[in-house]
Image (cartoon, rainbow, N blue to C red; front, side, top):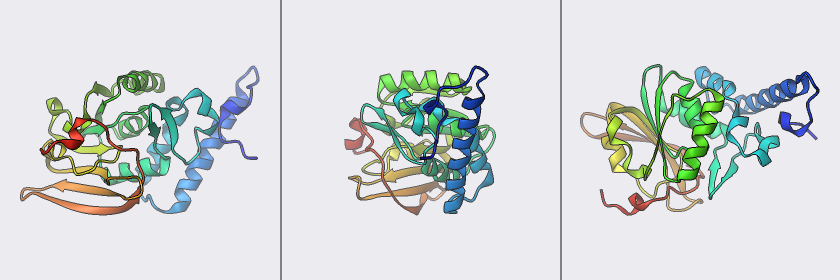
Length: 234
């Protein structure tokens, strides 16, 4: 049976086993992602490789930290599959200095990947306990500059708008219009949309001078976006 994480074996006193098990796990993950051919951007792949996912999973799931699969983080939420994180990050097309808003902080993993691009990252989480945990995870992993906020993410974070890009890490029942309004002209929103887990599509919405354009990236499966904003008419 293959080993995909360092925490499945007790390290020796020099920590050599820890180092090599982490390295093998990350190498296996990156090989799997590259083999799919779905994500073409080398900077995105390098960002995924640099972020140590082990910082963002529960202790009980440490042995699966570098599996290319979603994992539960409690309270009905998940940390996304690394391939999906890479796909959505590529769709954002961000770079150094860009202002990026994330809706659904979760454990902080996606925010850490976004920070690797040199972007200024703002992230909103509706569940206070997850936001607190994410802050701890991000600090321990070296991404303490990510700004966190606890609120209903459907309405975004207007205080820091406009954004160059916005990413939503849970499925909305409809395109959140407040998020479109918080994009700069030319900015992109990447969001899964669908009323149930079996009927979701990943969309890229770009704000233009005339309105917006939308691109369908195909079927996905996410936990639903929660909060009263889902039922708002705005």
